[in-house]
Length: 222
Length: 222
DNA sequence: GTAATCCTTACGGAAACCCGTAAAGCGCTA
DNA sequence: TAGCGCTTTACGGGTTTCCGTAAGGATTAC
Image 1 (cartoon, chains in turn yellow, blue, green, red):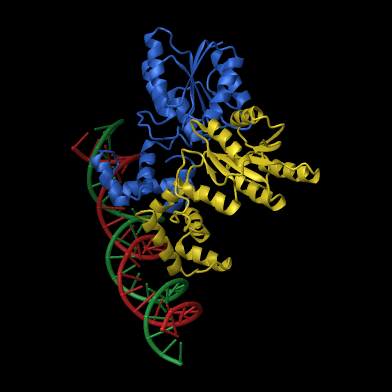
Image 2: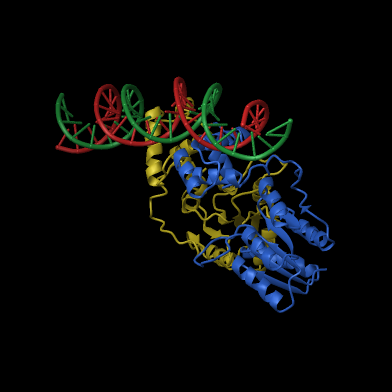
C-alpha cells in the first residue's frame, strides 16, 4: 500500500472520514491540508527532503475565506503539482458529477481516479485507492458511468467557455468582440461570436442567451 | 444533553463525523438517514411510539439518484417535520452560506441553529448542539456573521424568485406575463414584470438579464 | 491554377430587451 | 363622491439580440 499520502480537503467534516480510510489501509504517513497553497508547499518540501508523496487525494472546490491564496481550486493544485512532481498519483474526491468537468480532469490533468462524494463514497474511495495502487487507469466511482469516448461535451472548448464567461458577466456581443481583439483571441467578429453562441444554444437546447447562461451555470461550465 | 437525535445527511463522508460528535456528547440514541423521505418516516414512527426525537440535524441539498423521492431537500424535510412535530429542535448543517437562504430558514422554518460546513465546522457543530440544548436562539456559526435586521435580502420575495426562475428557463417577458395570469399571480402585466426585473438588476448591479441570471445562480436563488 | 469547401465577417430586418414617461386602476380619507 | 397617493399597466423609441443570407478570405482537392 501507499506509504505517504497527502489529503487536500477544506471541510473538516469530510477530511475526518478520508483520514480514517487511509488509516484503515495502513498508510503510515498521512498529511492533511485545508488550503491548496499549503498542499503545494508540502509536496515541494517532501520532494526536497527526498521523501515525496505517493498519492494526492484532493477536493475540487475550496471555500474562500479571509486568507489570500494563490491556488483556488483542486484543479489548480493538481496542475501545479504536475509541474513539480509529474509521477505523483492523483485521486479527486469531489461532489462534482458533470461529465464535462470530470473528463477534463482525466484528459488534461492526468488524474488516476475520480470518486464522487455520495451516499456510499467512502467505500468507493477505499476501492479507488487500492486500484490506483495497483496501477489501474481512469478509475471512476460506480455511480458515475459515462462513455469516455463520447466527444459531445469535450468539443466544448475553452473558446466557448470564454464566451459564456463574458456573457455571464453582462458583456454584450460588441464588448465580447472588443475583449477578444484585446486578448487576440480569434475569431473575434461580432458575427462569428454570435454564430458560436447560436451553436451553443442549439447544443444545449436553450431558447435565448439568458436560458443558455442558466444552463451553463448548471453544468458548472462557468 | 439530548437523548435522541436524527441526522439527515446523504454524504457518508460527512455523516461519519457528525455521528462521532453526537457520540462524544453522550447522545444515547443516534439515527442516521440518507434520504429526506426516510427522515420524515422515522420522525413519524418515533412520535407514534411515544419516543419522539429531541433534535434533527439536517443538510439542505441531497443528491438525487435512481430513487424516487417526495422530499428533495432539507427545507422540505423541515417543513414536513414542523407539521408533525412542531416542538422538534432543528439544526441545519450545510455548505450554503448565502444570507438570504439562511435567514429564510430561521424566519420561515423556525430552525434553531445554522452551522456552515467549513474548515472548523465540527467544533462549531458541537457548540451549536450544546447551545440549542440550552435553549439559546438563532445560533449561527461564527464564520457567518450578517445582520439579522438587515432587510435588504429579505425583501427579495417569492414573486422575484418566480420571475428569476422563469427567466432562467428561457421565458421571454410576454410568456412570463401569460404564465402569471394562468397562475393568477399579480402583478402580471409585462410592464410591471419588466419594472421588477429592473429593480433586481439595480439591486444586484447587473447590466442585463443574462448577467442577472448568472448572479442569481451564484446566489443560489434559482 | 482553378474549383470546391470551410471559416470568418458583414449586413439587414424582425423580435425582444431596456428605459423613461404617462395613463389607468384602486384603496384610502375627508 | 371627489381628491390624493400608490400600484399597476400601457406606450414609444433606442439598443441588443436573434436569425437568415451573403460576401470575402484561407485552405484543400484535383
